[in-house]
Length: 212
Image (tube, rainbow, N blue to C red):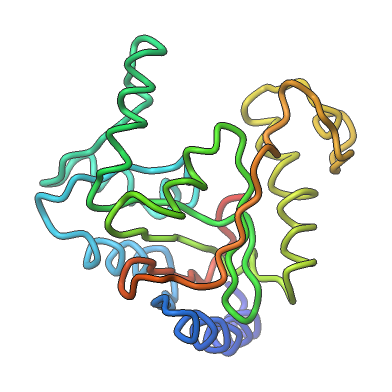
């Protein structure tokens, strides 16, 4: 990455981390994907039960593969053969030791914004798993909550409906149409502004463009 962009990301990450710490959450900065992977694995004790919420960023740094191949109990809903098995895996995830996830957007002062369709992802961020580890590229940092919501609705959501092959207006226009389509993935909005439980939420900021 360009050295000037890297310097800017380093400075901005300090501000975001200070904001996270003021909200009873832990923040870390990784200079690249490899450093992010190392830090994430440090936060996941061997033998832990681990689940995830469709985080492309976790895939991109190699974390999902590392957990699947490591000494962990990975709860994988994607291997379910029936809707009943998938639901059982999702419910089991609420009692996991670690939940791996990303954010649709974050603010410079440490507020985390997410949109969800099935809503298992936002509900597990709010409660359930003992520890939540976010992998967040610096491309997702926004000025404020308004900017973060706009990013989530106009960048993350249209790309994700393309990924899932869903029939929504934003799949055709590329931006949010505030729809009520049966296929909408904008069912639940979660703004995480504080963590009641210290050491539960950890955010690794990565000097890279990750996810959507």
